[in-house]
Length: 93
Image 1 (cartoon, one colour):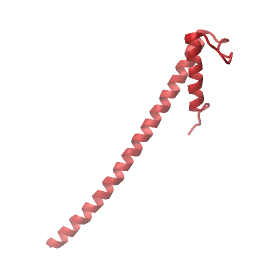
Image 2 (cartoon, rainbow, N blue to C red; image 1 turned 90 degrees about the vertical axis):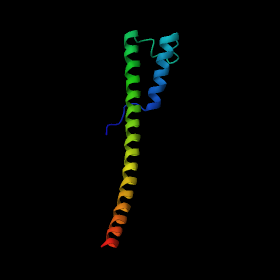
Image 3 (tube, rainbow, N blue to C red; image 1 turned 135 degrees about the vertical axis):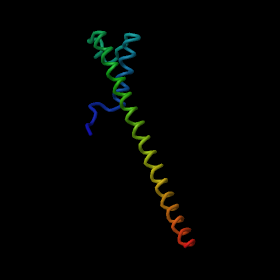
Image 4 (tube, one colour; image 1 turned 90 degrees about the horizontal axis):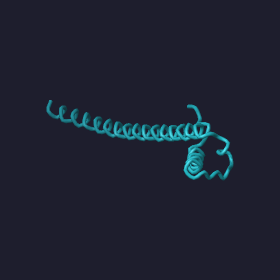
C-alpha cells in the first residue's frame, strides 16, 4: 500500500494554520501569505478530502474486523451445532 506523503497530524496542523490564516489573516510561519486565496482554498479542500478519506478507510477497516469476528463466532457455533446434531442422529439410529 502506498504511504501518505504527510502524516495525519501534520495535515491537521497545516489545516488549522490555513483556516486561521483565512479567517484572521494570522500567518505565524510566513508561508501562507505568499499564496493567493484560490490556492489556499484549494489546499484546504485537498487536506479536508485526504482527512475524510483516511477516516473512511479507518471506518471500513473497523467494519471488516467486526465482520471477521462475527464470522469466526458463527463458524464456531455452527461447528458445535453440527457435532450436536451428529450426536443426536447417532442416538436415534
